[in-house]
Image 1 (tube, protein in one colour):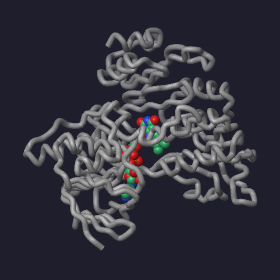
Image 2 (cartoon, protein in one colour; image 1 turned 45 degrees about the vertical axis):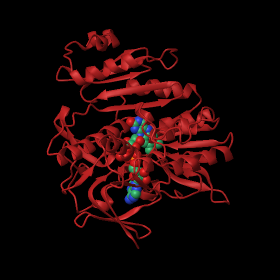
Image 3 (cartoon, rainbow, N blue to C red; image 1 turned 45 degrees about the horizontal axis):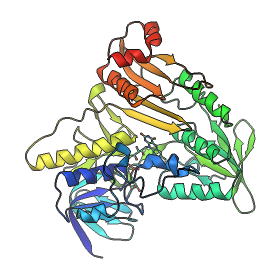
Image 4 (spheres, protein in one colour; image 1 turned 90 degrees about the horizontal axis):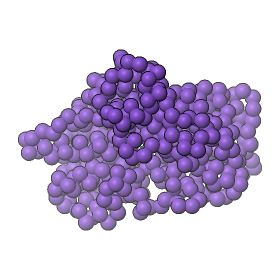
Length: 434
Ligand code: FAD
C-alpha cells in the first residue's frame, strides 16, 4: 500500500486535535504539511455536547453545530475548513501500530504514514463492566458514551424505548448528565453508585446533597452504596434488568454505564516514558521521545501552580495543551521558546437548569456558602477549599459569567483566609473583592 508522508501528524481527531489544527493554521502551517488521523468518521468536535444537548428532545445539538472551536467561543472549523487550509483530515482510520523510532504509523487497513513531528492526541476510552467480568454486561442496550457513534446508538434506544426505564451505573459527571438527559426524554431513571455521594472525586458531601436532592425532586431515583453485578436479558438479547450487589433487581430497558475512563496510551507503551497513567511531558508537552508531543487527556504534565505532575481529563486543558504544544513546535523551529504552561484547573458540568464551574484544587478544609437547598429557586451556592490558610479551590453553581470569573481569580491568586466562618458568611462577596 502507498505510504504517505507529512511534516506534522496528529494521532487522534478529538478536541485537542481540533484546537491544535487551528493553532497550526494561525502559525502559518503550509498546505500539505499537516495531517490529522482519526478513528472517528467526523471532523473534530466539542465532545462535551454528547452528554448534553446531543441527547435533548428539543434544542438538540447536531453536527456541524458543535465542531471545534465553538466551545471556547472561537471560529467553527467545519469539515471543509481543513482542505481549505491544506490540512489532510484522514477520518475513519484507526492507527494500530506506532513505531516512534522509525516515525511510522500503521492503520488498521494497512496504510502507513511517516512524519517528522507527531502529536499524540488519542484521548481516553471508557472503562467497561465487561472488563471486570460483570455477568451479562454485553447485552444489547447497555451503552457507554465516548464518541459520536455511541451517542447515536443511545439516541436510537431512547426513541425505541419511549417512556421506558433506564438505569444509570455510575455517579460521576457522565452519570449525572446522562440521568438528567434521560429524564428530560421522559425515561424513568435510576442512578446506582457505590460511593456515599455523587461526584465524590470533586464534590463534598454538602455539595452532593444539593444535586441528589434536586435530582430526586426531578423524579430520578438514587441508589447508593451498591454496584451492578449482573444483567438479565430478554429473548432478543436486550437488557431487561440490573442485578445489584445488595440483592435488589431493577427493571431496565436501557442501561448507561459511566464508571470512568482510561487514557489511550497502549500504542506507545514501552516506547515513551509514562507517569501517573499518562504519557509524561514537559511544560511544552514534549514527551521523552524527540519530536513526539502528547496533549489532552493522555498527557501527564507539570502543573506549575501546584508544583507537581498531573493528568487532567477535561476539555479546557485539552484545548489549551494543544495550543501550547503547537506554539512550542513553531517557536523551537525558529530557535525561540514559549512561556511555560501555567494551567489553572477548570472543570464544569451542566444538567437540567443547573450549571457549575470549579477552578483550582479540591484539597484541604471546605466551607459552603449560599443557598444550597435542593428546593431553592436560585440555587446559587458554592464552596471554597482552604489549604495552609489560603483559598486554593472554588466551586460555584449557577454563577453569572462575572461571578465565575471571580472564583477563577480566587483559585489563581490563592488569597489568605484565616477565618473560615467569616469566609462562609461572606461567600461570593469574598471572591468578588479579589
Ligand atoms: P478526545 O476528545 O477523546 O479525542 C481523542 C480522539 O482520538 C478521538 O477522536 C478518538 O477516536 C481518536 N483516537 C483514539 N485512538 C486512536 C487511534 N489509535 N487511531 C486514530 N484515532 C484514535 N470535560 C469537561 O471539562 N466538561 C464536560 O462537561 C465534559 N463532558 C464530557 C462528556 C462526554 C460524553 C465525554 C466523553 C467527555 C466529556 N468531557 C468533559 C471530557 C472532555 O471531552 C475530554 O477531556 C476531551 O475530549 C479530551 O480531549 P482529547 O483530544 O485529549 O481526547
